Length: 633
Image (cartoon, rainbow, N blue to C red; front, top):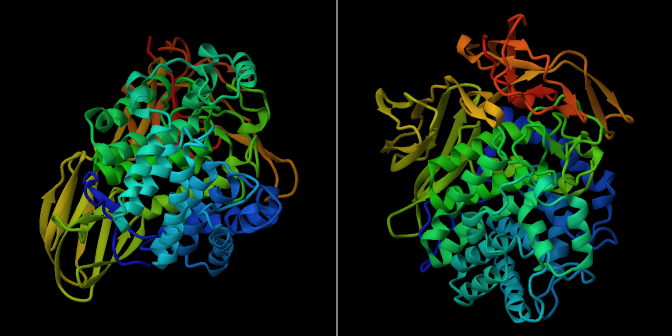
């Protein structure tokens, strides 16, 4: 593992934080169990059990030659080195050895029969991570040769479909390589790549896609137009590309990449504009925006694709580093602790293509998706389409990798301290100056509001810890050696002192129950970073032998409850349950395999008041998490 974080080199804009190398942060506690389940499930077996990767062209085989190999590798690398799993590392290095050996004299690499730029963008992210593990400068030489080839070829072979929407991912790697090497030609290349891509800055400020795409651009009509004109810059394809939920998720980081290169007020404010509009018109309570496959409005029965979940997380991880906004950390946590685990089976073998915030059955019923198939809601190996099967693997490992980041020292490029972005249990091993620091985060966050950060040092050292205080944590405080310091919600608390081996930071993040109002005046219930849901009793059936089979669930009890928030909420101390009052809402019925649109402020009438028990969102595969807000009369 390299022993320095890569900060932006001038003239790039100065960023707030820099990611630590892969393997510097390792999971502990429940996060370790989640990654271990992934490794023991599909993460460690997918090349053996799935045709999409069984004979991958990205390992020299005759199989799939587009995005699935790089997608899988992008999550496999951090998973393998965080877990120190030699079998996973060997699988990753089989891909990496072939990729590094595939480069020709001109600099091109990858499967020769597919010249598409897009999958190479993902492969470059894999090489970026691998360099931080090995420090092998041959990887940098490989990347420089490819980028020189790209600079020569882009006029004759401009970015095509998918690459135009995802250009920011490639430009981000180019700027990283510039910061390492100082090669000024890379700045020109990044500018050219961005100029050939969708102008996400302009799009997010204008945002013409407020409507559910089923109403704005019915799929059958749009599909006919797409087939009639293959030009990715045609009006139909531009509608398709800018409303595709995964493109939007990836595009969120692009204005910040542009800002790093050129500055600009519009670039600097584009993410905030984007998030406000996505939340207002397409947002749901688990922190995501809907897209089944394209932006689908704010109905909590619309789906959100798993690829969109993990790509939004990665965009927010890049934005955390580039902007230093504590608010971005709040958005990131909500998705990571709710939407991410909800789309994965606990055993690590199955996932959904589309999850629903209000999800009352899991089956093949043809739902009101925009253009996804009926099996998109099923837990399985490859429901609907295989992109998520390959891409889901980056979710937890990259989340782990970004739990702590480096803080730059003054005007230099050395690490001055460490910044905590979230408090899932983990271990950090890093060097600050000449001192090796091992830091462990203990506790059951986000369920627990108390976090213990224990430091182990070879010798005493002076440095700051920056502790992100979530906006909901009113009354937050850190205590070290008897000194108590209050933390401001929605900001970083700086704790700087001369640290000694065995020092402990006791951090308290008060996690009171609170509610938020969503579509149709629905109520969502939160405690800390967790969303809570009413678990719907259900019966599971299986389309074969576990674990490699489709999994279905149908409700066996009622789900159509309205909440009575004014009657209060009673959380258990450990955060496992929240009790509250509600009533059956007879007018709220199932429609097309999903919960119908929640009724607005339904009156209780003669319905009996019942005690409801809510659980963390991801623990309830069948659930209601956006409730009609009931009236007593």
